[in-house]
Length: 266
Image (cartoon, rainbow, N blue to C red):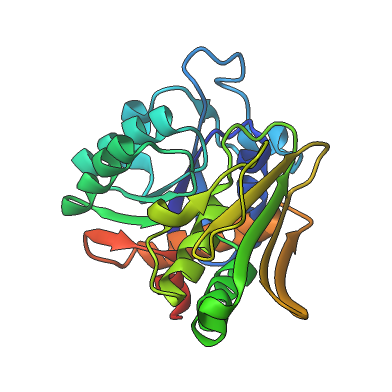
């Protein structure tokens, strides 16, 4: 059995991860983590997730439980993830990272841990999204420069970063397909007299509201037609199942950086 720790255990994604671990084979929840000042430290993680007591008490200090798990799953915030990754690397523990919104400097700091342990990092752990990324790159290669590319994404009102990590991953996929550098051609908002659209631009439109789990559409637009490739998530369970699958796979890997596409073999 692969022993899994979940951080942010009291959050929406944390609770879903605890449920996904309970439903999966070959893995078990042995550690649940929250902020040290959380009033939920000491509570039963299974009961908190609505599954009934599972005997795993929520801890507030990763260092106190570092020997009690094999792989940590972290879908929290950049600062917390950086601290958790450093702790895991120092102890040789592996980590699945679903956190988004890192600055370039934070990203560099995070990825430096791959010298000591195995990291699996993805903007989205849904199997469907990762298949979509592959399709987007192929579509961009085929359609080429004759089509304008625009990306739309919508998420719930609580999401704190924009565009979403998944939208950016989709942008990277199509940019690679048409041999462009996304940093050079991305446009993240339009207002006022913007002038005619530049052909090489890849545009992003962001919507926040309600309880939308995650909608993403990439549009390839030409005169007379458009191609749209869409993924819609209706439950966080799709992300949680993928992250648990990644954790089970990562347990057998050597130090290095991996993606969900490595897990899926695509």
